[in-house]
Amino acid sequence: MNYFLTDDQKMIQELAAKVAKEKIAPVAAHYDETEEFPWDIVKSLAQADLYRVFIPTEYDGLGGGVLEMALVVEELSKACGGIALCYAASALGTIPILLFGSEEQKKKYLPRLAAGEIIAAFALTEANAGSDAAGVKTKAIADGDSYILNGTKQWISNGGEAFINTVIALTDPTRGVRGSSAILVEKGTPGFGFGKKENKMGIRGSTTRELVFQDCRVPKTQLLGKEGMGFMVAMKTLDQSRPGVAAQALGIAAGALDKAVAYSRERVQFGKTISSFQGVQFMLADMATQVEAARALTYQAARTIDAGEKDVSKISSMAKVFASDTAMRVTTDAVQVFGGYGYMKEYPVEKMMRDAKITQIYEGTNQIQREVIALNMIKESVRATKK
Ligand SMILES: Cc1cc2nc3c(=O)[nH]c(=O)nc-3n(C[C@H](O)[C@H](O)[C@H](O)COP(=O)(O)OP(=O)(O)OC[C@H]3O[C@@H](n4cnc5c(N)ncnc54)[C@H](O)[C@@H]3O)c2cc1C
Image (tube, rainbow, N blue to C red):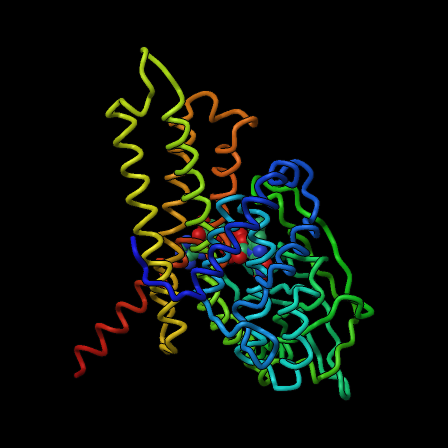
């Protein structure tokens, strides 16, 4: 399908596809096996200027937006959903600075993020605050010109590797979620350490780790926006980052579809390639249709955000739900097309199926996304009735 991408967008897409093919595909199985953090790939992405694509030109970026970020994530995910997350999670950690950073904060961090010299992370989740993100307990209590942070963030992508971390913490615990704030914490700040590194089902080419704060003193100049805006910063950030998860899901699904089509043309049973059986053809047709629909919705969500539309929660959640459910279905069917070989680690599709699963869970589970979609629909209906 023609998505009428600009020449610059096509160039970004081609560049990301080249890095994915030449640098990521050959090492995807290695990182899946070892769960090491792929710093060599981060370097390649930086050399290809791919961290610049969604950062404004005044901060050494290329001036693109969510669509450019999504195009990169999609291409990288075709080769490895895990390694792609190292890039996407840095975008997630960068978005709060883009949306709420002061001029000083933007000048301090964005050029280094654009160059890929440092990467970012976003820390909202805690052991007892997952879907119920408003239940965070990490505190950031004012003390003179600083905040003192105490608490633990769980399952943070790029945790331990990111230099700059957006941390949602309570500056006024008496006000609950209305007393939360977003604070930028640099790696190396005394009192900021790292806990358990997770051993995961999929996206093993990425790091998921605890961030631990013990009397960690951070200057008040690291506050994003104003005190009390933490939950809002988190929700607005997720609105903009969810098309990135959709793009990751889309890339994994598209990668699995390519492998399934190629395999169906090679595998011979009953004296014919399995691609000649209608049962297999119909599976491939459904997979391709779902992938294309996921792509259309993902790009449209990204374009809507980039156009400056204010209320983007619904379309952003729709893209995330649809693309991630597609990724799970398509990768499961890709394993089916490969038959028993699909179940074996020597073939790439079992990894894709494992990598796909997380896209239905993080940045808000698909149950929570459906809630967001429905609540927005009801709000719109109430508004329309009042007119
Ligand atoms: C690999 C990985 C990487 C992650 N990276 C990050 C990161 O970088 N930063 C970060 O802040 N967080 C991160 N997370 C956390 C992630 O966003 C949460 O896991 C997710 O939001 C769900 O929270 P939970 O796991 O506590 O599930 P729970 O909230 O305990 O949910 C359990 C089940 O109950 C359902 N459920 C809960 N509430 C409702 C409801 N109201 N209605 C219907 N169903 C409901 C859920 O859909 C789910 O099926 C990561 C998680 C993982 C696994």
